[in-house]
Image (cartoon, rainbow, N blue to C red; front, side, top):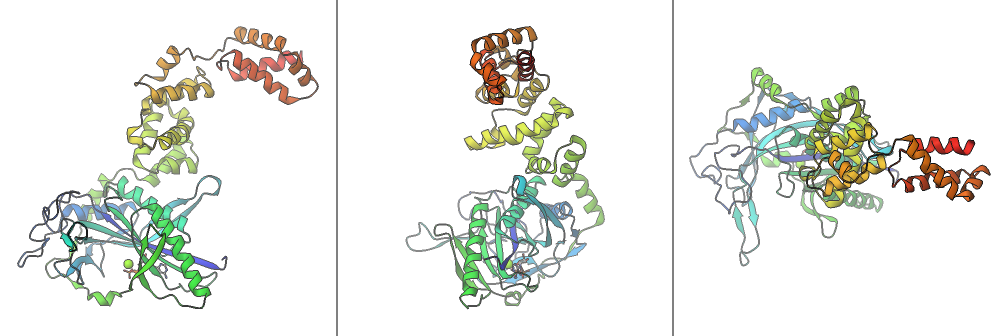
Length: 484
Ligand code: ADP
Ligand code: MG
């Protein structure tokens, strides 16, 4: 197994968040009745001409700037010719030799916790194109239907270099890209509705060999889980083929989520099969420097920039900064928490957001967007831990109450439930004395050198205090008394 190296390059189709199509004024809204959102241009009626949607171009520029790519001063739309019932023109308008975005890179984190590592994936290009329609095979008494609502929907096809070396890296890349296009507002990222779909090109080669192996392309993976499962299956299949003495033939394959297998769809076509040529109906796309400057000024702070700021200004670890910038919603939530709790509490805020809140949301299958605990409420909780009003343990209780509550603040809950920590040393001392008197056996064990007995005594005091005694004070007082 070890002697094979996996090589993966990914092509992603991101549906651009414009209200109308890329070359017509028809709506792009999802879910309308079939063929109600296809105008003469989308139906390819004779004599109509495409008109480029400026918003779609702006999305491409935003993307190019966000990944540090070159935004081409001049790019060209080309016809990709093929026959399919859902493509009435007989060609798809795409970009071929001169794409709008060239190069760039995405930094990602692969894995979690201790084993996590950083990786940079280079991008080859990104180009604008139109989507095709959809063939419907159900409900037609043995016939098929064509829905052209999706025809002409603007897509940005984002092509990576073959830089990924495992299905985990492929998933990390797809997730980073998915977060980025949503972050900069060019794609809603809805994978169920097909707004973000990946084709994975997979090959294997003997470790140490420079030349790439022959790839097979797995089409239209619309979930991160399918992406991983499809690649894992495909890699095993290819290794098996080669080890049994067969060759891999370049091909396009489909993943069947039910069987977990990939199967051949067609042998791979080459670019020349499509007879690409510049579309005579469209002028070259020229993007001025001024336009780029304007789009740049409208970009939000990017995840990478935000990570740097979290590390440098808030003192967070690279791992925390990475986790908190996984999505803009999460980053905004965290920042709102810190804005109230104060920069000095950035680390505890990070922990509460990444650990406690995340776990609770995950358990209930909820998104941050409908978290019952607001950033302000969580900040209030962090502040009461910071000023020792409550211990970390009691804080978990308060958090539960916030989660199940009706919007009450941490302060209100602490008041109502009498959770304020006991820091009055006189009160703690009398509890300690009681416990020592009631547990002579533990005291004797401790004096005989059993450290465990000490913890048992701490536990007894905390129990007597209903969890509210300041743990540090309990520890200190117990040590004093036992030493005396
Ligand atoms: P197309 O699939 O349209 O023919 P390309 O040849 O440019 O386009 O390649 C598409 C994708 O395949 C890119 O993401 C590229 O990184 C990846 N790729 C190319 N060769 C290999 C290979 N041998 N193994 C894995 N991925 C590859
Ligand atoms: Mg391809």
